[in-house]
Length: 219
Ligand code: DX5
Ligand code: ZN
Image (cartoon, rainbow, N blue to C red; front, side, top):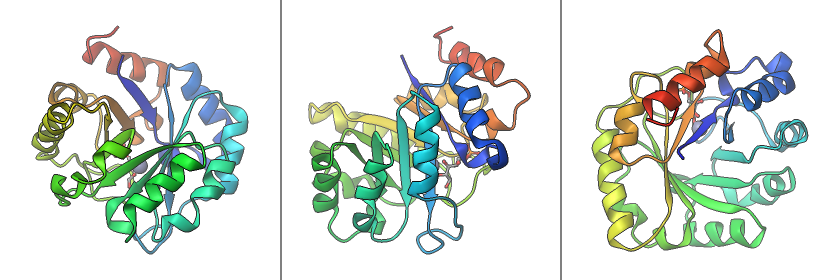
């Protein structure tokens, strides 16, 4: 089954606990937590304190997306805050292999994220060490942006790359996923879908997630 990961970036932060419980009840698989530092991306969001609070109100895995410089300085805090998956941007750290290993040693599942124009070749020497590769299908920093179309071809090429190396890293897409884009993303080989505005901006979270599952051929 494919994985649906609502991004709390588009939730009502004044009612964050209720919002997280609402998407869990609506059938979400993971909770996607967007961490931004105002340096790697032009926006500032949340840190380990909020991550820990979210972890207290849900049984779902936390998929923590670090859009921060020097992520190696903070991964331990996020593991302690309950992160299950920690994804780091390949552009954000000089010592990618070391940081991926650190995440695993601390007991979380490491993943790497590529900005829209970062080539797949940047994965060559790290792919075998990660559980997850996330492709940004928008420029990171904000919710509610339009899906960048060539992310589909990039997803197909990544799926071939993973298969030809005999690996099983999951492919996740982040940005602009909605009822118009989810099916083609899935057909291209995507396993996990982050959706912020499409879910939290909808009237009925259960109906929206159900619609996604129908489009994915699962309902
Ligand atoms: C963007 C974040 C995304 C964002 C996606 O930098 O990484 O996770 O919340 O939002 P939507 O689904 O609205 O494009
Ligand atoms: Zn994200």
